[in-house]
Length: 138
Image (cartoon, rainbow, N blue to C red; front, top):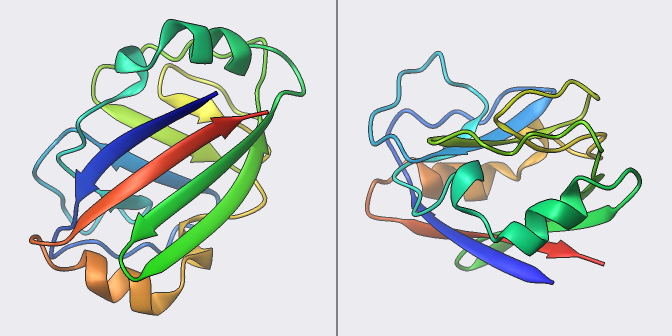
């Protein structure tokens, strides 16, 4: 099962957070949002397919995330959790920790915003750049 979310870059994208990755529907971004890698997303947690969310709410479900910003791709993996709410209306957050709130999509990720290659991050600092977050559940 797969779902794609489109987003765009922003001049304030830093991608320096060591524990999370976030995309948001919001169009504005301050430099305080150092985990955010994309703005103006077409979906947030509450917009995702109901069947996908049900799979994500199962402990141990393996989830593969691919972030595509041509010509670059960045892959990470994490896990579903039966405590996931997946209802936030603006954001999607991927976490290295097991912390869960309404913005959390997956937990125990193997990578964070800080791990994204700097060439990809520099591309995302351009508001004209478009990206895709692909969510795949095995």
